[in-house]
Amino acid sequence: MLRFRDRTTDAPHRGGVVQNDFLATLCPADFEHLRPFLQPVELKRHAIIHEANKPVDAVYFVESGIVSRVARTQADGAVEVAVVGRSGLVGLSVILGTNIALHRTVVQIPGSALRIPAADLQAIMAKNPTIRDHLLRYVQLLMNQKAQVALCNAKHEIDKRVARWLLLAHDRVAGNQLPVTHDLLAMMLGVRRAGISEALAELEDKGVISKARGALRIVSREALKAQACECYKIIDDRFSWQRAMTHYEHRLQPDS
Image (cartoon, rainbow, N blue to C red; front, side, top):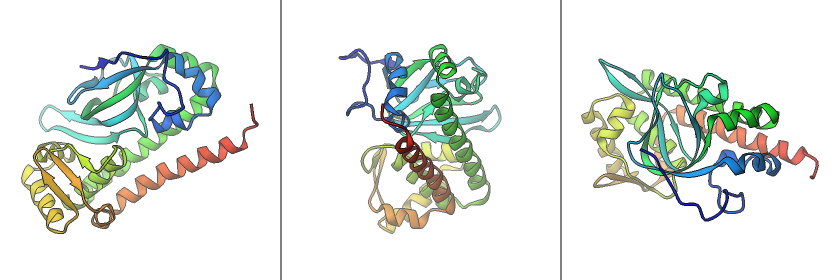
């Protein structure tokens, strides 16, 4: 379950406290519309934030940790379709107006988030088109990630997919240590554990990563990028482009 943290201030503020990239790239005036409704919560490992085909009561702007959107079948189990960290949010159905989750959303690496009730966010979006448009751009980014992950899982070898996943996770957490296991990677990529172990052993032999109990450490990010398929660069380029466009649009806005 999710655990609410005690707050020492009325609400989060931009100056040195908000760690979520989406919130950090809002213009100050738009952020102020959201700020009173944002409540810090702890994301505990394996906590289910949203369940597939169930109502979504809140949106979570991830500040640390990794959250996965996973598709499931009774016969085949779960596979990850998108990874969300401090660059994004979960609860897209609220933004799209359906309020029903399409996938299970589960915490894979513990961390924290800022939670806003669905009704409050929808009311703010209705009154503030710039906030709505900013949210919809993130929806587009996540749709692109899901499409690219689907292609990657269908076309690329396990070692390339492992490198892609590790890079996406590394982008979304602080530091070089990733508290992930062989079993977690196997489940996220929808492959056998033996294939994950073989791919990680090869990366370790090349000096790209080092393994510890229950964790992996990225030794050389550049070497890891060289091992990954093109899918990582495609996803990363989309997020980089969005950040650049947001910065450019803020510069065009008149001073308040």
